[in-house]
Structures are given as C-alpha cells and as structure tokens.
Image (cartoon, rainbow, N blue to C red; front, top):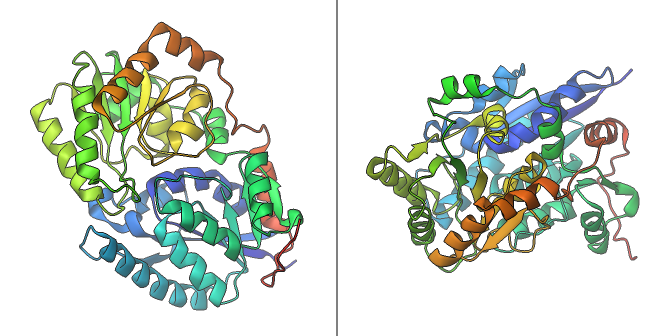
Length: 384
C-alpha cells in the first residue's frame, strides 16, 4: 500500500502545540508517512530554541529552515520570508511530499505555501476562514486559503466564508478547533509539578499575559504595551505570568519592555519566554484570567472556563464567546475589563459560557481528511 507522505511545517511553539496531536495520530496510521519541518522561532535561541519540543514529542525533524535576519521591522520580516521560501525549495526537492500541512496565518507560512504551490505540492490548511483584522495575518490567512486544496475550518461560519471565497464546498470541512481538543484530552500537570517546573507560586492570585504586536496598528507596539503595563500595575495584589510575544515586527521592543517591567516588580511579574503546550494548558487550571491579544484567549481558553481579557485590535473580527471581555488599548479600558473578568460576575459568566470552537470529534475528523481526502492542485473557482 502506497502511503500518503504528509509534510508538516511549523514555525512557532504555539503552533506546534496545536499540531502535535495531529502529527502523532497521522504517524500512527499505516497509510501515512509524516515528515516534520521546523523553521522560524523554533530555531531561534531568543525564543527558547523550541525545535527541542518537536523532538521531545518523538519526532525526528526532517529539515530545519533558518529564517533569522537580525532585524525587527517589516523589511526584516520580508527578508526572513525570502530565506524561508528559498530554504523550502531545497526541502521539497529532497523530501518530495505528497502534501504540505499548514496551520494558520503566520508570515513564514505564506512562504511555505508559496513554495509548495509553485512546486505543485497540494496544501492542506487548518484554521482558514477566520478573521483578525488588526494584523497582517488576516490577509496572509486568506491568501493561503486560495492556495490550498483542502480546508479544515474550526466553525461552520468559517466554512461558509471559505466557500464564499470561491472554494468548492467538497474541499471544506468543519473540524472544530484542535486547541480545544487539546485542553479536553491532554493529561495536564498538577499544581506541584507546574510550580516545580516554573518556580512560580501558583497559590497566589495569578493572571497569564501574552501580548503580541498588532501588525496593522498605526501606533508603536511597545507604546501600546505601556498601556497594558500601566493597567495591570493598578492590581498590585496580582501575580502576572508573562510569556514572550511572537517574532512579528515590533516583537523585540515588547520583549525589552517585559524584561524591564520584571526587573522593576520582580515579586509580581514572572517572565517565562516559552511555556510550551503542556505548561500553558496546565497553567490555565490555576490562573484567574488570561490577558493580552493572543488568539488562544478566544479559541482555547474559554474551554478552561476562565475569563479572557482581549486587548486592542489584533483579534478584532474573530468569533468570540461570552467569556471574552474586550478592551481598547486605553489604560482605563484595560483595567475596567480586567476588573470585570476578576469579579464574581465575570467568573460566573466564564463557568457557564459555551465555546463556539468546540466540536467533540475534532482530531478524528482532521486526521481522516488529511489521510484520505482527494488533493487536486488544479482548482476551479466555485460560484455559489
């Protein structure tokens, strides 16, 4: 029996945390062969050199595609994309995959998709049809959708949006969000295990903060983060576990702000550059709320039945449940939203709120589709 060779490309710790159960389930099948390719943040020491997390999950990394250029602005990211595009040519020529599996909307994935398309490798895209109007990721996601042959979307509205873009309905599948599956099915760390791993006392009232640059924002990302700091400083009783942002344009300036904040308030601010999937999901058991502008706060966190404070425009337009409390970039707005999230009313809302991204059999649907669905590189525009 000829096995379908699936090349899974991953560029960030968060993305691999979502993809790892899919990769494991695919690798367990007799009709599939899996090659994992690591790029971008996985290969940067400043972001934890998280390629090791792939290996710790039992996978040999079939190829590494470095992208770092040493810069932090838009031009540096374009040059990094060019490095990724060039590197992926060599990888595809060597591995000769039957398809490329991509999740989401990151700039490196646009390079991966472009190389795959031009080298006639069908693309399977997870998490298309979503919107995040405050980031360039929004346009990247939709561009990848038009390059892809199979679409694994997280909700029915996202499926309809993909079809509205001219994709054939037979290639669009509602799978639910894989991150929600992870929360419900991973064996999470105990409080004691997590405290030993992080060195953080989780008996204190704690929130988890992740803040990325909103790449379409007209304001400086570091200045936006100043407002986050000022708002959270109004809650001196809170312990704040802070993870580093992605390496989008402006990300390094945010990291510098985080490190200075931690030095100024070492008893309150606990910085962990990369929690990884297991520690991140486990941490949700013990924090009062998640704060920032990561998509995880809207997609996965509601299943943990804790509030999310979503700040600014980065996730604007993305489907959100009732446990997500939105704030503008204004200090008072952030503080007010956090106050509501931490209130008894906010906690009660989070306990009762449904997650629109939940579907009970997400992993099985994804793995069966990736393994067996027809993949045609030539597509016709579907007129609904």
